[in-house]
Length: 82
Image 1 (spheres, rainbow, N blue to C red):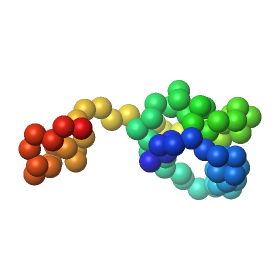
Image 2: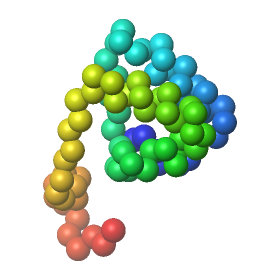
Image 3: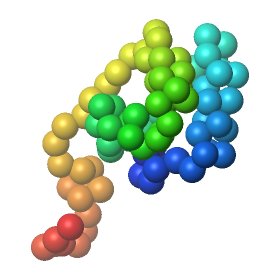
Image 4: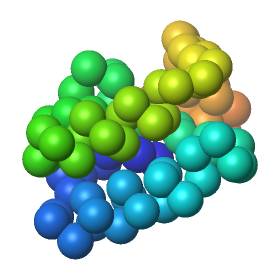
């Protein structure tokens, strides 16, 4: 799940390397509970964030899901407060 915690400097570079290697060569699926508009803050460094997000967004197909969590809906435990 992308963006659950901010990226440290080494993780930013690693993410950029991975996305760069796959850009226009392989499909990449990114899942996140974090809105895309907050990804810049999570990646942290503007130049790297621009490069990563430009490559992710280029030729992307975005699917947004809304509603209750399937885990919560299918849970056998009742009255769970999250």
